[in-house]
Image (cartoon, rainbow, N blue to C red; front, side, top):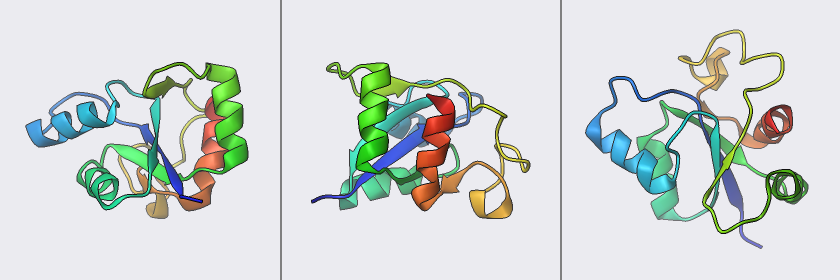
Amino acid sequence: MTKNFAVIRVRGKLRLNPHVKDTLATLGLKNVNNCVILSDTPVNRGQIRAVNDYVTWGEIEDETLKVLKEKKGEKERKAFRLHPPKKGWERGGIIHNYKAGGALGYRGAEINKLIKRMS
């Protein structure tokens, strides 16, 4: 069974590097609070690394993916539109890394809790 990542765009479009802007568009993350599900491949990991300062990501569980598809519909689209998280983002705000108390970067399995708060 392959591992899947959930990638959620956290930051907006203001003052984006053209390379980052293109990579976000390639991933299908055109707006804030959009979520895409990606398989664990070297190409996807490289794209996530390139946009790490604008997204949060982690390994999504099958149960969370099933709930997400039921609530948001399983259509032929790449991105799921989510609500802002209930009770807001973490105390460190959206401009800091998750390990430092913010919202950006790798979360691991904690991404499942965030998706449940946003769906």
